[in-house]
Amino acid sequence: MPGEDNVIYIGNKPVMSYVLAVVTQFNNGLSEEVVIKARGRAISRAVDTAEVVKNKFMPGVEVKDIKIGTEVLTGEGG
Image (tube, rainbow, N blue to C red; front, side):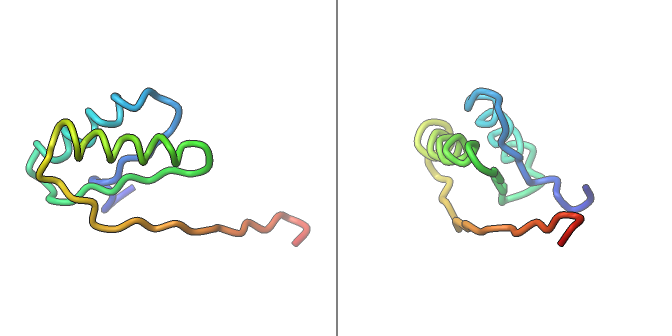
C-alpha cells in the first residue's frame, strides 16, 4: 500500500517480532513516526509492542496518539 511505509500491522506473531519491526523502522531513518495498527484480540499485543519499544529499546520515543474506533461493515443483503 503506497504511503504506508511507516505502518506496522499487528497480528498473531510474538510481541518481540513487532518490536524488532518498529525499532528497525526508526533506525532506518526514513521516518520519525511509526504507526502501530491492530484489530480485535491483537490490540493488547499492539499496546505491549508500544510499551516494550518505549520502555526497553528506545526510551526517548513517546506515544503521540491513541485512536480507538469502530468500523461497521455491511453485508451483501444490506
